[in-house]
Length: 231
Ligand code: ADP
Image (spheres, rainbow, N blue to C red):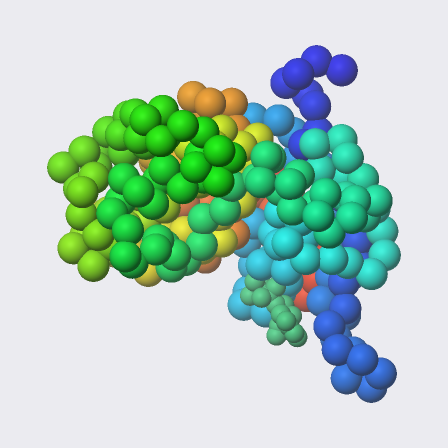
């Protein structure tokens, strides 16, 4: 298979439940889909449909009851908890609705963190983080803490932090959910542009139909099932 047609996510008949006994909720009901390397995909659907649950499975931060899930060609159910954590660190970057930047650190230090965790040299991490913040139009905010930055700037710094470790996949859960429309557009534009530039696969759960229209493919989930998938 060529690099471009390689599936980075291959899900087959995934079932996910919450709760026990009479209180069991069947949250995902037989989800099968593939997401290819370099693709950008939005996952849309009503609240409670199972979108975040699915994203968390794809990002290897949650488990499922039955079916098969391969991420980067690896059957993730076969990995131990420790191996899964290492696998996730290497391959997946996350962006959430709230930026989750560490409040006591500057934008630069927050952005350096994924590299420092991988034991890169401080000077190298600093240079890479500076360059990344520059790409996100945040050079002038590098030495600012999150409390000294706007919501849009914090969210852009969070995307920079997710991308800096060069993961294969970015999982974004309502990344524009707290932003006004101009900041949303700005964030979505830069996320997808950087995705294309670095050949990343970008999977975005969103209610923002303008953002969904910017991705290569949209998958609609209703009541734990795929109801529609289109370009
Ligand atoms: P969406 O992202 O589409 O809004 P979610 O994936 O967050 O939907 O949730 C799907 C369903 O699973 C909802 O009914 C939600 O209440 C339920 N759910 C999500 N997380 C949990 C949990 N940790 N424990 C129990 N139920 C949950």
